[in-house]
Image (cartoon, rainbow, N blue to C red; front, side, top):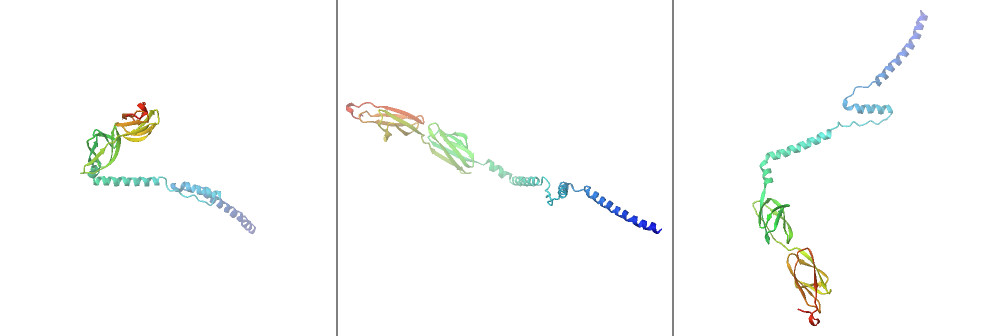
Length: 246
């Protein structure tokens, strides 16, 4: 019996030692099994587990749920629209009156019959009494034989505005030559140089041009300039006795 007891005691330690590895194996298996986590942190937790397995100390940051910034932007836009709607609801008549405000503008020119454009749209010919939007209005005046004019007019309610303009002739270039050259040129009684010479004259208006050279008759013409650039040639004739003729 003593021998059997000793044998039993000797046999017990191996069984106890064998039991310890079984517990360790069960713990490792439990650690290997995936744990249930919340949906929002499933992916970061998986990355953390992978990093730990690789021996890395860095832990990935948990990102905020997608769409948070978009929701905030939509909320801000909705608030702005609501505020605008409230302003219109509080004063609908004022908004309509501001959009429909009209003012009176009269346009006169010398001479009359000049085409009028307001904000790029044809509005009639002078003299013209116009109904225009209140505020600063752009006006353009045009005529085939006068230089165009552009003005900005401040028009106020209950105070008719008047725009009065004296139209000016356009400036044309006139090239004067002579045969023989080197003659003195006068335009409107004013000396402007010797031929060949280019001078500036009023367009669509008669201008007196004189060409003088010693030993030749005086050349005189009334020139009506129809184009922005025109050319004339004075054919000089010998004066009797070799003196300047009249």
